[in-house]
Amino acid sequence: MLCVEHWREADKVSHVSDRFLVSGGARLHGEVSVGGAKNSVLKLMAASLLAEGTTTLTNSPEIADVPLMADVLRGLGAVVEIDGETVTIEAPAEPKYHADFDAVKQFRASVCVLGPLMARCRRAVVALPGGDAIGSRPLDMHQAGLRALGAHSSIEHGCVVAEADALVGAPIALEFPSVGATENILMAAVLAEGETVIDNAAREPEIVDLCVMLQQMGARIEGAGTSTLTVTGVERLHPTTHRVVGDRIVGATWGIAAVMTRGDVTVNGVNPHHLQLVLNKLVDTGARVETHPNGFRVSHDRRPTAVNVSTLPFPGFPTDLQPMAIGWASIAEGMSVITENVFEARFRFVEEMVRLGADARTDGHHAVIRGIERLSSAPVWCSDIRAGAGLVLAGLVADGVTEVHDVEHIDRGYPHFVENLRSLGGEIERVTG
Ligand code: UD1
Image 1 (spheres, helix red, strand yellow):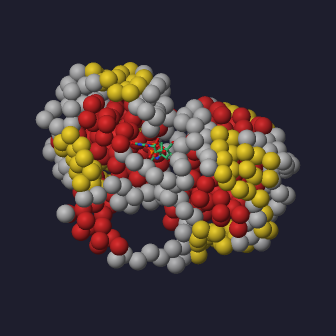
Image 2: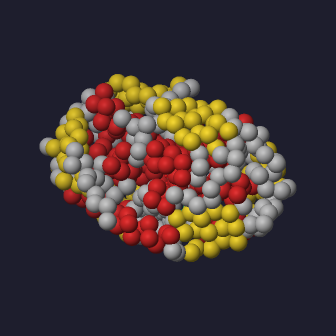
């Protein structure tokens, strides 16, 4: 019943939205530094619950989701402090097992407290998360994994409820290399009895980052970065200090912006190996790409050439960069086919691109885009973080001033977005309310 009451309360909260005014025409140039990955830090914060005491995360990105996750953890009994790019989390001896519903409903990554709570408390009640409008996001694989470890799990009154007398290691084969399911099962398995083997595990760099931190905490994990993770449960973990891996999605966004605006941008703070396929695609558009150990430089001096893109789990082309790929395809020379294989509704934002004049149509998993020389400004609406960033990039190559509404989505994943874009010569202004 508790869940239902909280959701009703949330409905009463009114929503005021900010917008960006983006002027088209500037060629981006200069250097930009990228912070820690959103898709890593939120999981690392949840993982800190696994060990009583103070865990410190450095290189944390200053994005809206970090304080939201801090609130989730506070609701579970942790003391959390955020000081710029440093987050300290003092996890309690006995965490509460009810995740705070008001915070949980606001963002998808909150569901990653499920694994740590099962590991520490053997029970968890977590409201079904909110998050991006990119399609149905069930938790069946998370639940199946916990059941394999010996838990009962059901959905009750809008919450995932899980309980176990004991967690016992088991072989678990995932139907799909789900990032979230891999993480939750991993975090439950590190304190289970015996050995868990996760087959068809996700291999994203953020999962490797989580494995590295868990290993520093004393967990026994083999196979990080491969599709088979072998976890031997230990009795307890200890807190640690860890630097969050650089955000490859943010880094690639700036690289793609360079391609679209015929600019020259150097991105620091990202491992270029995490973007191998994306950088290869940029080369296919005619861009010059140079890599260095901590980043890369992308430059382009003419209209990009059309290239086909198909999203897949890592090391494939990231679904989170699909909106940006549609952006570059919309002004490329030739026709591109963009195929979305991960989220069923991620093409919703293409309607907004059409408002900007893109010659794009979608059919199921495919979008066919005939590039045109220039887009034309219009009011557009962000439906999620990445679609929002994609629309801003499109605004940079549209005639006139594009109004991008609901930019709070962008705040959830891109730290200092306006400042960074301006530092590269982009013309953008934020209008509040
Ligand atoms: C994470 C990322 C998101 C990224 C996505 C794929 C975070 C906070 N978010 O999301 O930015 O786009 O990985 O790289 O890290 N699925 C099921 N059942 C499940 C779990 C997933 O059917 O139990 C499906 C999803 O609906 C989706 C696909 O599997 O179609 C991939 O989802 P998943 O890899 O789990 O993505 P998230 O962890 O939610």
